[in-house]
Length: 397
Image 1 (cartoon, one colour):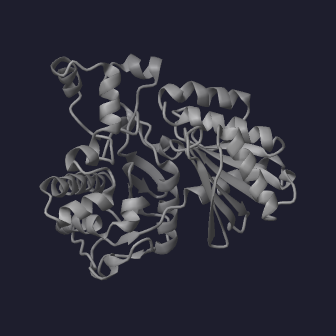
Image 2: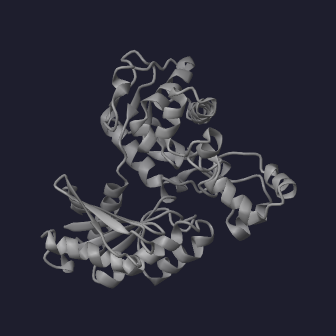
């Protein structure tokens, strides 16, 4: 059965098609600069990449090219072969605790929740409509970043703010990156050969979050009402003193819109390092002795360690710590900074194993009291799995 996993951004569209349930990747593609000048897309088939520069005026045009590539490369003979299309949706709030088939009601809810994820949910809605136009007979599903975190207890997701803000406006912790946290925690359970585990997943990329997963269930996560909370990130500030906002609005004569733009797009590693938000640029600066780059690295590592320590106490121990996403998978220097700060827990780094980039494996020593792993995430296959299950369920197979 052919299943398409889709991740639509405001000016991008990432897709991957699988033969399910074998989980065989058939084609991968990424459309960039949709609605902008110099738009293009890249596809990969059998390990071979091809880039094509085309005019992508909107998402529907991008989907049209996608279908064209599927047909011309003999991935499908007809769009009728595509039985399911799984769409990544960032914000499902407390409306959805699992992936779901998209009907008009679900689509309206996703659209209504755009106020909580203005950079993500509107793009998902556009993507869903575009794919429904081209593949109308497939079952379209929404796979939410927030659903995996719906198991965290009330004491963890509530804020000490007026209770009516929660009941009337839905103000509470929702988290994000749930699809990645779910995949990595399940994979670690496979490696450990058991499910009665206490796992900490560190999803470290331009967006970053840490989760505590006990017996396969998420019990806490670092992101909050929005993805801004928690760790320092590429351009997001993470946890901060909320009174700074009012202070800077007065002292800097800034509007709330300007403040929002600053804390989401001009803060984080970018603001501290002064060289950019990309970890590779910061590493290069640190190697050259740039004090601000070194400070950015140390602040990032400290915040990660603080959450790991918190979750160690929360779960009364940890069976494994996992590093994933761009920095987690490809940043041995940052992994080293984090693990060395955890020595008090009896964790020991295997310096040689830690040199590997982008590969699954153990990076702590055999005598480390808590094993540390690198596990490359695969959100696309998780989307495909949930979509396949929903297609089977709706076809009564």
